[in-house]
Image (cartoon, rainbow, N blue to C red):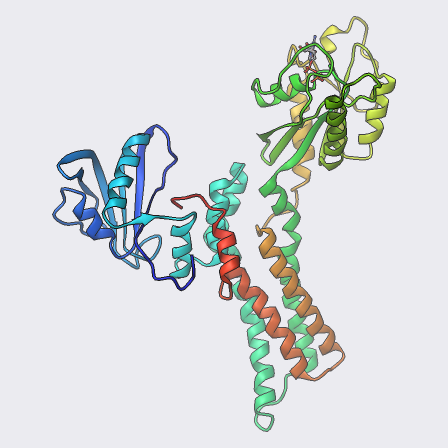
Length: 448
Ligand code: GDP
């Protein structure tokens, strides 16, 4: 969709397709009210009022509904919007959408409602991105952080920094344009202002790593020889029967991933048994290679060995791969021990996945390590696009600062300040191309 495209009336199902209490069909655009009146038994739809009625397909009653009419600009998209709340069944919502589409609306594209909200200035771009974050948040913590950006926390901060840079830029321009009347600002003043703006930008960028972790989650890999209980532990941590568990060595041939909420989002990875063995077949060889890779990529490795067998040469080899990374050593199957446990590696966690003995302790240990990855106060949540804009702004400001320190011509400094401002405009969406915009909204779901 093009920014300048004339807006047609769009419609989509805004609730997940499934069986539930309520389903919502959203219509946005000039024809929303006409369509809703045409397909219902309502004589009028007063804006801002809750309207009860029936959706009709000709003579056929489709469903008894509640209709919520919003008159522009007081709606999510800023256009005329009608939301139809019907009974939450897959076919009911589909039937209603079908009637709406046959009566003058077209199917909405991904994120088109939010895109219209942005284009109608109901949200800035950072808020629109927060909508997507909020919907897709993997943890309750990230959902709360995203809601902060939806309320405009990032946008407000960016606008504050922009206002500061703008003020300095105006003084420089006044000095350049009216040299007789207005004195150029002092270099010491410029240095002070640029340093302040840089500090503010750095403060937001300092939260980049923890906001990435909040968004994407911490990768935790379970590694170890075949048959030590990796898949069993994977299931136990997730409370599910996802991975296949057998007592034949090497059954976990693929890498399996699942999300786990430990306050911070965790992607739990069950690797194929890492084993350097001449007799293994090709599939397992590939599996081993994958495992080594994922052990390298993981933020935290759980290295599992069989307490009853003790640490073998194979175990040592695997341990050597992961020991330089953040890891927890776990001695599993302690229920099978006939003698007292002998700690071969310091700080080994003892576990029996079978009896669940030690499972809660292990979870706590994981939690404390995983939380350290996002310990810094995450005041500002940013995504990669916003971080790249901030980095560009920072580079421009650093050039301006350097120029001010060397007392260069203020015309030159002005150019850097202008590009710093442009980079910030991109974050909130004042300056944006169709490509960037489509790229952002293509990730949304239909109906949002
Ligand atoms: P993987 O190859 O490392 O993924 O190991 P699995 O999870 O497939 O487990 C191998 C075998 O060990 C299965 O028969 C499990 O039931 C068994 N097992 C796993 N954990 C324990 C445990 O704590 N105690 C006992 N007794 N058996 C376990």
